[in-house]
Amino acid sequence: MMEDMSTMPIQACCPPLLASPLAADEAEQLAAGFKVLSDPARLQLLSLIAAQSDGACTCDLTEPVALAQPTVSHHLKVLLAAGLVTRERQAQYSYYRVNPDRVAVLREALETS
Amino acid sequence: MMEDMSTMPIQACCPPLLASPLAADEAEQLAAGFKVLSDPARLQLLSLIAAQSDGACTCDLTEPVALAQPTVSHHLKVLLAAGLVTRERQAQYSYYRVNPDRVAVLREALETS
DNA sequence: CGTTAACATTGATATGTGTCAATCTAATCA
DNA sequence: TGATTAGATTGACACATATCAATGTTAACG
Image 1 (cartoon, helix red, strand yellow):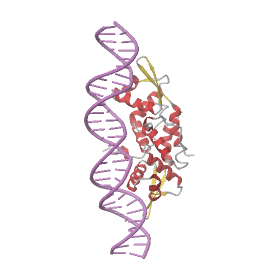
Image 2 (cartoon, chains in turn blue, yellow, red, purple):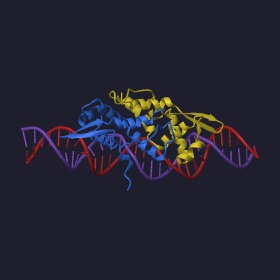
Image 3 (tube, chains in turn green, purple, orange, cyan):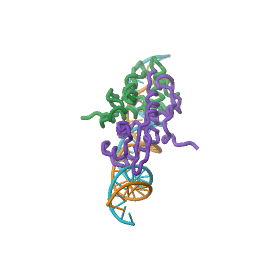
Image 4 (cartoon, chains in turn purple, red, green, cyan):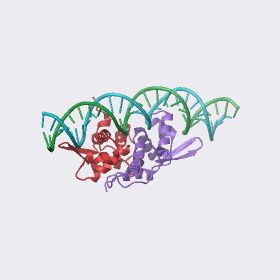
């Protein structure tokens, strides 16, 4: 049985896009990663989470992005599934942190070597 | 009158995502750029175009991505509208080239400064 | 206990978009 | 001129997804 690609973390997978032709499966991997970044709410969330070095809870994030709480939870779930953030639960709170290594995978794919 | 954001070229717009909180309009700009990269066919096309330093025509691209010609034309139009590629017409042919500066805008937004 | 708070999940809806067949346009060639 | 070729456009369809109201879950607090 195959896993659903869209819920899998972004792998260190590919040589830079512009350096050598991309195989179909590499293209799918990378595209799934960029799709996670293709929503303005998720970019703002990533940015807000990065600004809180000790972790950001959902309650800190809902108001600045001006979206309902279930929508924010949905976007955080997408970021988490991609591995772009980590989640740590404490009591009722969920603390999210950016995983810079996963961001780097996507950045490096855009390198003009 | 406002232009449709999705058909506008990617601007040099934003400080790195992880360095400072992103404003809503900056997030929309960047998200539109990453959305263009969020399709595996478009990533493969970009990669194939980059591999042909003297420009790639549509006819060179249809077979390797295994899609119908109108679909390839559609994706090329999206890449062109975003400014990620340029198009030069010669006779019946359209030659596409990568615009590395626009790719760099997106790469730099992912920098961990 | 019951209440409240943080967060996740479900379900519904509206919108966006990737795909291709059919068609159109424009240029080459016989 | 007619035939062919490259490529763009149109229209239709299937599928994905962003959003929120309602509900569920878990934990603190009285």
